[in-house]
Length: 104
Image 1 (cartoon, one colour):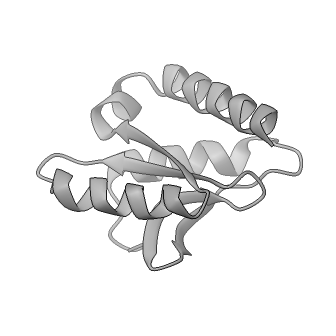
Image 2 (spheres, one colour):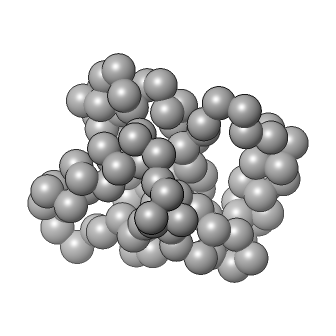
C-alpha cells in the first residue's frame, strides 16, 4: 500500500511527518482489528480514512461501523479536499482530535 499510495495520501502523510502533535502520532496504513485504515492514532482511538473516487461506500460504511463498535472514531476525508485545500483538512482533523481528547 505504501508503494502505491495516492497523491492525497502522500500529501497528508508528509504533513503528519512534519507536524508536532506532541504525544499523538498518526501511523500510515495501520491495522486496527480486522481493518486497515489510512491513518490511525492509537492514543486517541481515532482513524482517518481517505475517500478516493470509485471506492465502494458499502464496504467503507461496514468497516467504519465495526471500528466504532470497538471504540475507534473514524473520520472520512475526500481525496479531492486534501488536494485542493489541505490546510482546511488539517484544521478539521485538529478539531476532531480536540473532540476526541475531550471525550476521553
